[in-house]
Each structure stands twice: as C-alpha cells, then as structure tokens.
Amino acid sequence: MGLFDTIFVEPSLIDELVKDHQFYKTDDGYYSFQTKDLDNALNNYYLEKDGTLFYERQEYELVKEADRLKPFSPLFNPVGDPVKENTNVSCYIQFYDFYTTEDERLFYTFKAHIQNGKLVKPILIHEIEMTDLKKEQQELEKQKKIWAIQESTWQFKVSKFIFDVKWRIRKFFYPIISRIDKLESELRNKSKQIAESQFNNK
Image 1 (cartoon, rainbow, N blue to C red):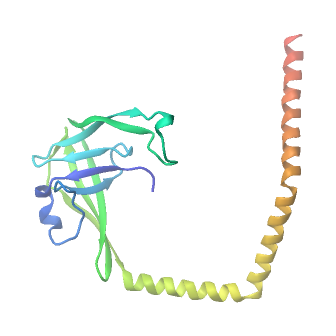
Image 2 (spheres, rainbow, N blue to C red):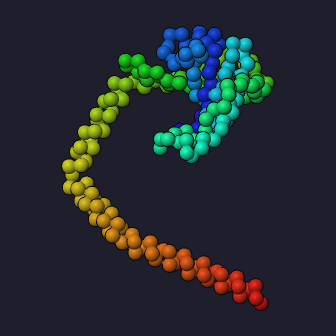
Image 3 (cartoon, one colour):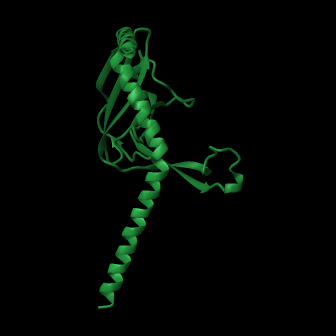
C-alpha cells in the first residue's frame, strides 16, 4: 500500500454523505480518512468547518539510544504541541475509508476540490466499491478445497520433493559458493587496481 497521509474532516462538511454509514470518528468528533494525494509522509491534515485545509506541524527530537528501552521503541518523540498551518494548496484530494456490515464491505472514496487552501465545492462521493462477504467466503472455501485436492496429487508431492532437495543442495553448497563469489570479487577489484596503476604510470 505504501505511505499515506491522514485527513480529518469536520463533520458538517460530510455528514449528509455519511450519516447512514459507520465511518470512524475521532474523540474530538472529526471523521478520519486516508489519502495519497498530498505528501504521503504520514502527516495529518485538517479540513475545517469553513473549508480551510490545515497541515498539522509537529516538531520532534531524536530519542537517545540509551533511552530506547524496548526493541521497537520510537526513534523520535514529539516536542511541544502540534501547530495547524494553512496549506494554501490547490488540488483535488481523494480520501477513503471502509466499513463492514453483516453482508457487505463498503469502500468509499470521496473527492474534495481545494483551491488556495480552501474547499471550493461540496465534497462528493467519487466511488463506492462493494464486496459481498458471503460470496467472498464462498470463494475462499472453494480455494481451500482446490488447494487440498492439489496437495493430494502425485505431481504436487513430487514437485515438493524436488523443492526440498533443491533447497538442501543450495544450503549445503552456500558456504562454498559464498567463498567463490568473494574470491571472484577480490580478483576483479585487484585487476582493476593493477589496470589503474599501470595506466597512471604511463
């Protein structure tokens, strides 16, 4: 999927489009969507009630290695409170989210026209993708049964045996191949040094 940004939309701008749906809302009441039409740097943007698009600027400091107590501790800590800055951008922004019902998964893409940092037209529903969960589950069960049959065939068993043998051979010869590769690289580098030395001494 790659990186994206988050855009928080003030409810009054989009309530009429989403009032019968189950989209996520933050604790402070904004709808939260992802977009790939801005920086794609995990930044936060806010589309406010008056249509202004703000960028949330946050300063960070590097965490000293001695303070990283856990293997996946953050490398940076926020410094101070975030500040909202007017973007003054002109672009079309598509943002999206999904939710599931008992029968369907619905993926909504919305579109906003921003000019000089301001929403100039009402937000629109750009696209709706619907997945029938019952059909999806049926297809999954079908693929599981096909895979079970495939595993039982002699062709698959022979191909698996070949793969296992091939893997064992590669594992056995890897140290030798690695040494040969290293020797080849060293010889090539040495030949380059000799050639450069002879050329420079002419």
